[in-house]
Image (cartoon, rainbow, N blue to C red; front, side, top):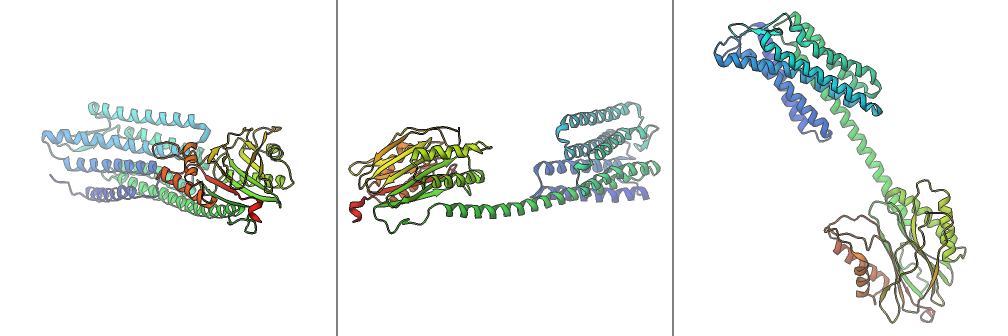
Length: 491
């Protein structure tokens, strides 16, 4: 098997070798493109593969020419059919790329219509090639199996030209959708083959289309990869900026909650400890405690709907409102009612917060409290064990304006302990999708009921983590424990 080493064929062999080399390297490069979107990677792997098939089929045709054996008679016709068919597929794939990039938003119906038009053109092109096998209208082979263009050869490129013209229309119509560099690469790919087809009509023996197609495709790929890489780098920079801001937000949020213990070193009539572990960088849970006056301690445990930055912002507003209203000496039900009305006044995102608020008289141990849709508190009396207090729930804060809340009282004698928490504790879920539950929480508290509030929180946190193990944390874990010592022990 040999090739006619005429000047034209030598040029073609160089074009083919260069094209196969460039396309093969491009396929490898596409496969290793870490920052290229998956659909773009798949597209260009297919695109360059089809170009390789097109070039390879042309090379085989050159090899088979001049051989008259039956095998070559069939083989040269098959590879030529594939060569012409793939040339249409390549143009169709370019059309798909252009319509995908244009993505005219609400004009999705137009994209579907355009795609159908392209498919019809590709089908007509394929049908013409099938008919040509019997009519030899596009091309033919003589008795030596040498390829010859026939009078209808130009017609074999009609569908290519129509698809290219259609692509020109899309580029013009949706020019605002394209990056300037990408638009120039697409224009180059559209115009270059048209010029190559014209040159090939004049110089029938030289396959200008092969060289032009490979160069234009490689340049198009380079531009798209460059754009995607720059986009990835910008996204990384933006991510770093957001990470920095989230770190700052986490630190700011942590500083807004009482986090220095002992919180009141000058007081020995009560002992308090609290903790919050957000599921994200910033959370919606919050706790608070503050001295309203020398004899009254305010206690807050709350959980904002949602997670992340929006919940954290809503949490900040809620926390400030609750403390400010409580510091005026209002009762728990008045605090919740007033804060609810304030949050409902301007709440376009319709966020809400569950709140348990209590006011403890440090002289008598009387705890007045109200619950706005929050978890039940857990109380341990001096001579008893931790028990769930099923208080009456009111509507969540921010849910509806004008809601009234039920206030109730608990007597905390010296030695009593109060445990408050958010739903992230009982709803902590393990890999088997099993929740930790309130029963396990009460049992964990009873295991260390004689310990200090700090030790109790550390124990519950350890038990929850051991239960969850490697399962992801979906909710904030927030806890507070108060031990009432009483004035008689403070003397």
